Image 1 (cartoon, rainbow, N blue to C red):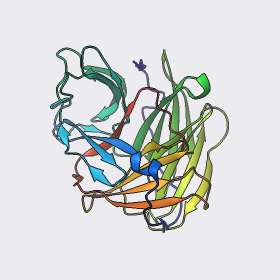
Image 2 (tube, rainbow, N blue to C red):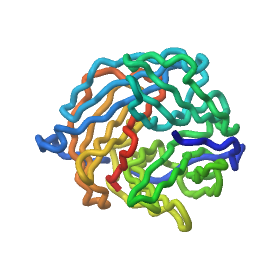
Image 3 (cartoon, rainbow, N blue to C red):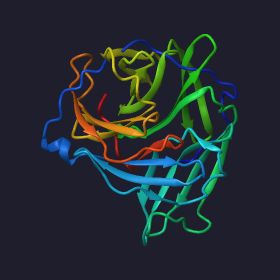
Length: 307
């Protein structure tokens, strides 16, 4: 289980950005690898419940399961990160991630029973990390990976500031969150999704208010992010992006339009600037409630490799 520190290097953080616009997604194809790919979508409801739903590249969607219920106070939970899952004996799984409750960020974990929709009594833990997690934060993600045997954990936030936009980065250590660093110039970014985890960097897909699609490669140590244009327009309709590993070097990408409650799937090849292959797989046959905050469930040991 990840051990979350009790200190946060920045109690007052500030905002996000990038540039421009359309996304020429090719028509769907019936590639065998793509057809086998799926992602496990989770969300936090306004009532503090977790939901879970498997979405496949067909595209298709299993019925949405609601539960565990009442994990968090009504109307408080937002900015959930991806949740790492691990099977436990005799049944169920351990689920570990981050979530903001009001203006405070917590490390959270719990065990489910065999149904997957109820918690094992006494297993819910919430570790306070720090405050300052207000509406200026647009996106938060935790990257825990051991590519090449090098284990690391970093947390990122996309933050709205009055005159600029920031990506903030922390390194999570056994003694807490450290090495707080911010990178400016991201004011026009609308949302992001983690697609690549290397030993010394994390790669995100980012959309802009103008509709452009970029990759943002953020080093985990020294250096500045590398921003590369993928497409110039048509991506502005998505408030949320969820990405999962697909094949050896690709990504299954879900874009959620909260204004219409719809979602669209894309098969994205390994990021390579404007040469990146993007195949539109179609509209997902399910509804995405606008009031939910969405995240990805992933298996322990999964390393994203799309960037």
